[in-house]
Image 1 (cartoon, rainbow, N blue to C red):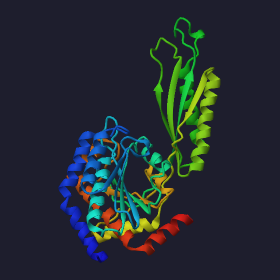
Image 2 (cartoon, helix red, strand yellow):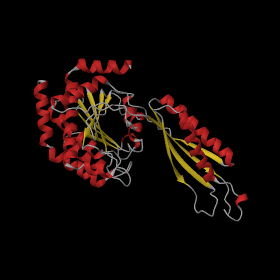
Image 3 (cartoon, rainbow, N blue to C red):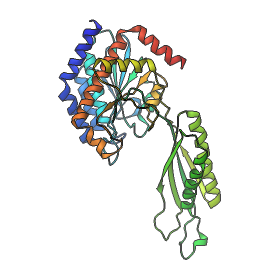
Image 4 (cartoon, rainbow, N blue to C red):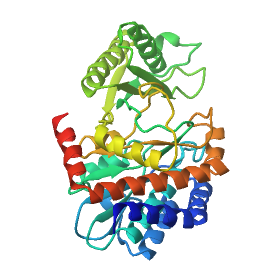
Length: 388
């Protein structure tokens, strides 16, 4: 089939399933399951793909809610990523219901449009993005071996093809002191909460000497049980972010030093717990990104004129981008919205949210179709990837 005709077929296939895809997004919105608990969400997506002829592996990479759905056995392999977890208390305020519905639509369109034997279409159900776990474990398990490109979309207030992401490391501090009556025998106590507070004070002083791209933020997870009892144990949890992993590691060591100093100053014993699942920055592949931009132009859609390096967060998609060419474009669900808010969650099932599902599914399927049909483009993409 000629590429031009194939692209027309894909547009029609996605448009014909518009209501089905919107229903998928709305069902996921109602489920709103947090990371590693996406049992109904995972089953919904996997069951749909299985009925469409995809071969299903459930519980991959040791994660109950992760899955791999494969159609075809020969040709270039394109992985389409379907995030599905929600935020505790906020539901789908990061729009993973839109992501999963768009991924499902793109995969189904490709399955019916691309001739047998010309490609291998893989849908990966990737749980617990908000916990920074799902894709990290899939990478460690070798799930991306043999994949030529990984693609997904994310809802946003604007249509963007390239958006940078920060590397991220997590560290927890637990301080142990000695309890005492806070009024009658304060001299007998060692206040673990003081250790936590001094850690925050030390980090706040450290901020004066941090690079502009660095972010350090944390919460107190345990601060004691009553005001009249000097806390015997207190704990806090910090994220350290930067545009490169070297700086993430360097700053994390300085944050640890703040906690160690606080422990010494207050007389507490300190336990440090480092999360080994460090999130990598997104490695941008300009060849693959440009191909997605071409599909937007084909659909008559205009990219927003917004910088790619502002208002940055982190995601485990960065870990995928370090081992295979990856794109993570943004599809618009409404102007002026910010992720992780109730307004954003509601917008995912609005009319604009429904349109974002269709846009994401169509643009991803068109991008994959061109990549499958053009070996010279795949070579250019990988040449860029290996040289950068």
